[in-house]
Length: 196
Image (cartoon, rainbow, N blue to C red; front, side, top):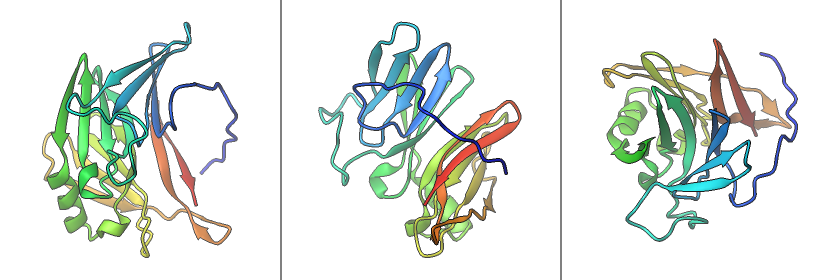
C-alpha cells in the first residue's frame, strides 16, 4: 500500500459536501449524500449544473439525515453514470443510472443477499465506494459496527447471484479502526480513501 498526499485542487460553490466524484470529458460529476442531484461542474467554464435524480420530490438538497438517500458512490461505465446508496438503512438502497435519462433501481434485495450470504450485519453494512470492472461491480464496505467489517463485495454484472466478499484489514488511526470512504480504478490500480 502506498501513501499519497492530497492537496486542494479547487473549490466548488453550490454543493453541500461531495461524497463521490467522476472526472469525465473535462467535467467533474459529483454526488452528495444529502442531495437528489447529480452535479456537473465544467472545468473549462467553471459552471455548475444540476441533474435532478428524483422528479417526485421537492426535497432536493440538504435533506434531513433520516430521509436522505445517502448517495455515497459513483462510477462511469459504458457511457453511463452509476450512483449507489449506502444501504445503511432501508431508504438508502437505490442505484441510479444516468445517461441522458435517470433510471432508478431498488437494490434492497441485492444488498440484503450480500448481508445474508457473507454474514455482514446491518450495523456493518455501509457502501462508500464503487468500481465497475469488465464483468463485476465492486462495492467498498465501511464496517461501522462492532465487528468493523471493512471489505469489498464483488458482484457478477451478468448474474448478481454470483458474488464474493474480501475482508480488508485497514489500519487503526489513533486507536480507532479506519474504514473505506471512497475508491476508484485508474488504469490497473485501485486508489481508495479510508478514515477513522
